[in-house]
Amino acid sequence: METTVFLVSAVIVLAGALGVILARNPVHSALMLVMTLFGVAVLFVAQEAHFLAAVQVIVYAGAIVVLFLFVIMLLGVDRAEDLEREPLGGQRPAAAVVAVIGLGFIVVLGVRAAQVSLGARSVHGELDGPGSNIEKLAEALFTDYVFAFEATSVLLVIAVIGAVLLARKPRDPRPARHFKGEPAERGEDR
Amino acid sequence: MSVEPSWYLVLSAMLFTIGALGLLVRRNPLVMFMCVELMLNAVNLTFVTFARMLNDIGGQVVVFFVLVVAAAEVVVGLGIIVAILRRRPGATADDIALLKG
Image 1: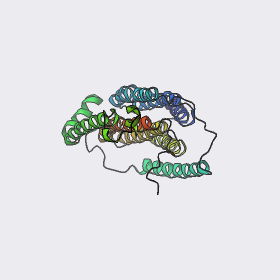
Image 2: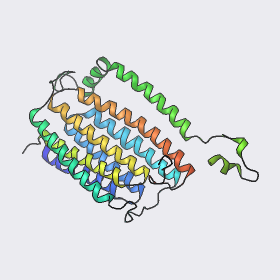
Image 3: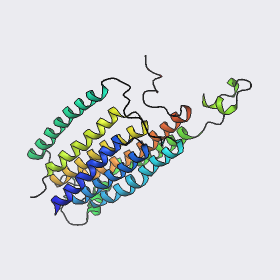
Image 4: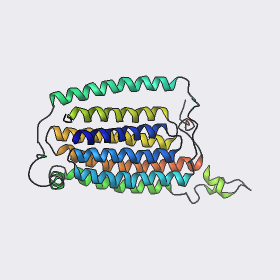
């Protein structure tokens, strides 16, 4: 049963990931990204990380991909991109070589780490202890990691302020440098 | 045949590599951003796998923080992309080379 779940969701994850990098249209990339994120959520459930699976679907597939699609539609960049043209000669073969070498390196590292099983066991609480997954997660989060948790709230506030400052249209940044006869819209964008 | 933890690690290595390859090859800044998300997800999968292997909730807590930081990163990054593409519609990663010597 677990083998079937793993194999099916692995195929979904990898097909979605390849779809993200091979789709010509950014909208298709975003939809393929949803597929990958759902596959990863299924793998989280298979490894008994139920809360993270829910958060993965809500935050990633819900919020982040919708934000991506919103920006794509807002900017009107939902045109197909010509993937045949290669602006930098020889970049794709070089990237493929780097990717294959990197893949081999990470696979060797991962398999080796799975064999020797580095690290101390059950430092922040046992995964198979009493209580549900979310109870154990909350206990670790609000005891050992409480300062990091508070820091993330500061981070989120900073991100909100940064996004507002970056994305709003400046009302009139340099009024003195407008040329005569040039529309104000254009002067703003320079 | 039971699922070994190393299968998950190999899968996340493949996912990470696909994301890195996309980041190197694609030129649309939005698609490059999605590739970064792929790499973040691969690392999340690794953390959850090690949490199960070592029977430790800490790995899952780290994934929680990665999710929060990824959300903040996407918000700021998309803000930057909106600001750039508003000035130069249709710009790719190659066109944004003002700092090139």
